Amino acid sequence: MGDPHPLVVHLMDRRRQLRLSQRAVAPAAGVKSGSVGLWELGQAQPRLTSLAGYALALRLRLAVVDPWTRETLSSDPATLMSAAAAHRRRLDLLQGQVARLMRCDRVTVRRAETGHPRLWLGIADRYVTAVGLKFVLVYDRPRCCRCDPWWCEKDEEHCATQACPRCMHGCPAPEGECCERAGGAAR
Image 1 (spheres, rainbow, N blue to C red):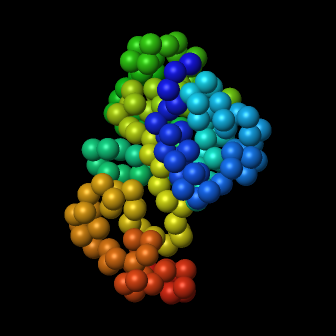
Image 2: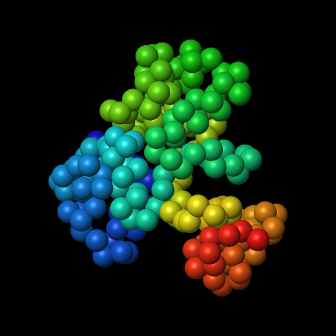
């Protein structure tokens, strides 16, 4: 098939950094360890739901973001594709136009938009790219965090523009303190 998808490469690096085996993360992805090995070798591609489970096993979340506005549209595996579809509609793009950009038929576009359970990462990625969005991996952080560590890593001014003091998770807890230990309350 070729090289593994860049998201799979990132997850593989993270898995190795955490010293976890393919066998340890496979159940979270809902697959056998051999499947994870094939993804990492680029000999197979995961379904979107499996990739999201793999990411969660590594304390990461798959998210769909707008690279222009820096808005995270969704990091919930159940709503990734519906968030991308809502973005397409806001842009007044028709499904036929997206199908031409993806070089596929409208049925494939409809399946992508509904988050079909058997949706392959490659199709989902082509759809998200066609509507001007991007898949990224973000740290699975406490819900009270309002600042996104992915953007902070890419742009040091992001936290300053969000008026976020620097805590361990990028959220509005006292500096250097985890927001979960601070009672989960934003100030």
